[in-house]
Image (cartoon, helix red, strand yellow):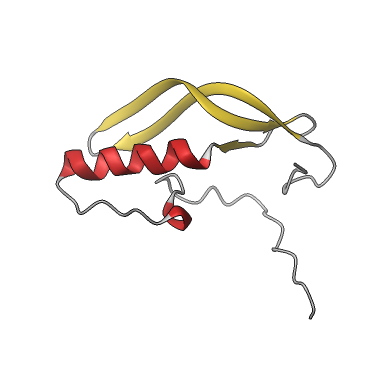
Length: 91
């Protein structure tokens, strides 16, 4: 899979630690499945893992679990880094 950040590298499967704030605590999960660009190093976490993680967090915090695949994004503030616009396909 091509890197969406640098558009040069390829994503390679890896396992890395996942860090995220959770209320007043820092949640750290080791050996999380992810994909990392072999050129710029940008990391995307595995979608299935993120969906399962957010389901568990919602259950623990008393929220109604959201089972939509599109809502798996990590719960962090925007980094302000440049991100390319999605490609627009003409029909």
